[in-house]
Amino acid sequence: MFLNRTVAYGSVVRRNRDDWTEIALRALAEGGLGAVAIEPLAARAGATKGSVYHHFPNREALLKATVERWEREHTEKVIELVEAEKTPHDKLRTLFGTVLDQTRKGSVEMALQAGAENEVIAPVLRRVTERRLGYLTELFEQLGFDHEHATKRALIAFSLYLGQAQMWATLPGLVEPVVDEAVQVLTAR
Image 1 (cartoon, rainbow, N blue to C red):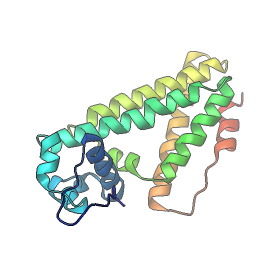
Image 2: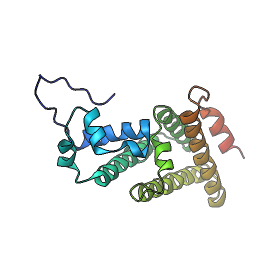
Image 3: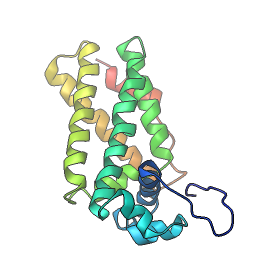
Image 4: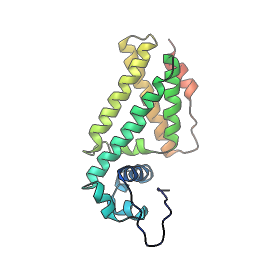
């Protein structure tokens, strides 16, 4: 479940910042915002809470680092991956295939959406949403749509993603990705 490291009896597992943000991301996916609490995270990871406090002065700092990691891994790195494709159509298909596959693996997105009022999560979630919508708009413009229609299609595409993420979180096993169908509908004129 969490980072497993084999250690000799009586020795302490040393965790770094990345370890703790990974542990916090998993807790967020499994139990929502409330699951990102230092003492329970440390206990589940077989470490002391001092190990967490060595890297983060408080829960808010851990949460901020965690959501910023999510932003990098689930937005910026995905866009980098998608940009390797040659055509806007291939980029859109790769984008949908990637994000829908990632969404099936965890519900961090839904946990963050549910915690959107949190003062740490709110600015990151807004920044990520604006970045994603902006990128989608650019893709639809590259496909030949004017800015107004590209913006509307971007919103529809993002809404489809959030709907799929919500359904996977609440109805696991019932929904399958609709990548090809989504791209076909979203790019039709």
